[in-house]
Each structure stands twice: as structure tokens, then as C-alpha cells.
Image (cartoon, rainbow, N blue to C red; front, side, top):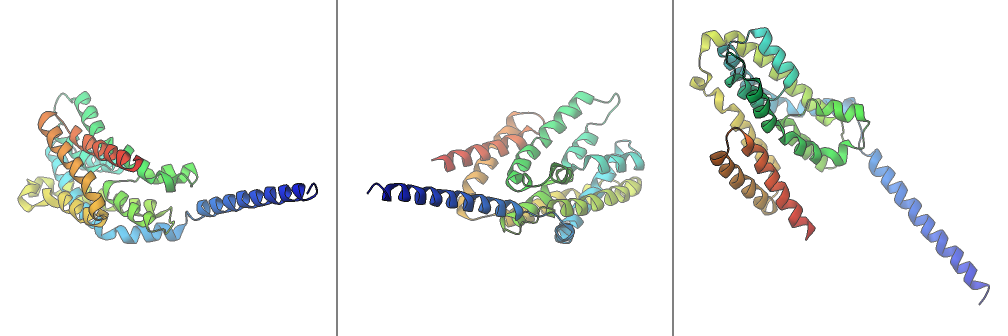
Length: 259
């Protein structure tokens, strides 16, 4: 009996050590499963082309509005190349006046773009496994459309960490090129709403929503986000309803999953 107890203790410790080592190897394997290579960039770029084409139509509308607000073709193009946030850019040019209402533009665009903090957090489980330069560099080109495509891709288990960058490049190229076209033609075509270009963004979001639909479990947060956004839009000035709708849906999901 005295001799068997140490032996069993050693075996137990070896079993624990083996299990711990296996867990570490599994974790390492999961981390290594998220890759960042040219193939991921290429796949993201090609997948995003149809969506980027729709974004291009929206970019033409922005270019027209920017010219009507008094921006030159170069100024509108520079804004699209460095900001890459369609809704915020359109709101900014809608508020454009003399003297320039800097505070109003900053606060309004901040309210609109705060949603990106929630979107970036959703990508965290995958991007945190990449080097900071790669993850943050990819996030610089994140927009609503390619975020939705990237979430679908990463949830599928492909592990293509560079997919976001590839989709972002496609969005950026079409957005900037379309801005040039819209700004150059803005003085000739006139109001983009006459040609239905103001509906392009809504159409793109409807198409993306179909891909993000996951069945009945998705219904509750979507309805909460919708109701919150509608109420906030009626009660609050500016675009705070976008952020509040997203926060309300996120809070509901946290409560549901913590039960």
C-alpha cells in the first residue's frame, strides 16, 4: 500500500501534465489557425467586388453632394481617401457652411462612427491573434459592408485574418474612384436623388442584412435595435440613434447569454 500511493500520485500528476500540455497545444493550434497572407487578401478583394460596386454608386452620390457643398474634386477625393466613412462624410458635407461649424461636424460624425467600436470588438476574437500592425492596419479600411462580409467569413472557420484587409482595399478603391466621378460630374448631373443614387446605401445594407440573418435567435436583438433607433431618432437630434440602437442590441445579447 505504501509503495502504490506514490506511484498513483506520479501517474495522476503525469495525467494532469499531459492534459495541460494538450490544452496548450490546442490553444496554440487555434491561434495558428488565423492566418494573414496574400491568399486571404485576394479572397477578400474578389468576394467584396460586387458589394464594392454598390458602394461605388454611393460614392458617386457623395461626390455630387460634396461639389454642391463647395468642395473641389481634389478636396472631395482627399476626404474619401483618408476618411472612408460614407455616412459620416455625407453628414459632414450636409453641414458644410460658412463659417464652418467645426464642433457640430465633429460631434455628429463622432456619434455616427462610434458604432465602429462595437464592430471592431466583434472582430476581436480573430484579429487579436494577429500582429498589431496587421490587425490595426486592416481596421483602418473597415466599413459596414466589408465588416459584415468578414464576420461571415471568419465565423465559417476559414481563419483568413487578411480577409478584412482584402475587402477593405476593394471598398477603398471603388469609393475613391466613384468620388472622383461624382465630384467631376456633380455640376452637370445635379441632384443625385433624381436618379435614385440616394437609395444605393440602403439597398446595400438590405443585401448584407440577409447574409447576417441567423434565424429566430437573431430576431430579438434586431427588433430591440430597430425600436431603440426609431425612438432615439424621434427624441434626439443628430445621428445618435445609430449608436444607441447598436448598444441596446448588444446589451440584450449580453443579458441573454449570461443567463
